[in-house]
Amino acid sequence: MAYPTELLTTVADCDLVLAEAAEERAELQFRQTQLQHLQLVGNGRATEKSAELTGATAEYNALTTLLAGMADGPTKKKNQREHKRLEYRIYVLSQQQATGNSGVLAQFKRRYELNCLTQQLTENVTLTTEVEARRAQL
Image (cartoon, rainbow, N blue to C red):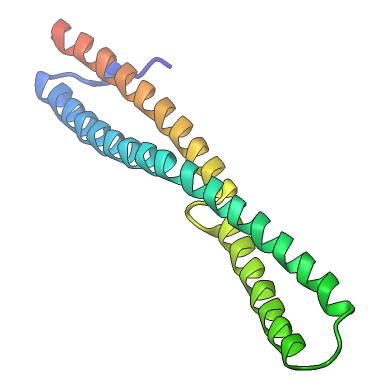
């Protein structure tokens, strides 16, 4: 995209735009670094949460089958409490996976934001190049 560099009539105008672009580039690069770190850390957490959810679901299903055939007594009560605990654990893990910092959805959002930042940084370089060319003309 061509910028209207002809509007820049003095070297001071160019310097002002270049300073603004440099500040924005620094902020974009900082945010990009943060997101890249979160992406690396989050990939491991997402896998860990998924495995934990799978394990809790398997245990819950096994207890469901076991409870159906158990006679009333202290062992059944203990297993019912464990069944309820697992039900809650599955709910919590599902919520974390869907909305948490380490869920699959969060990983996609981070990747999208990283791609957007890359485009913004590219555009920032284009702006800087065009303004520097105009500055050299003045």
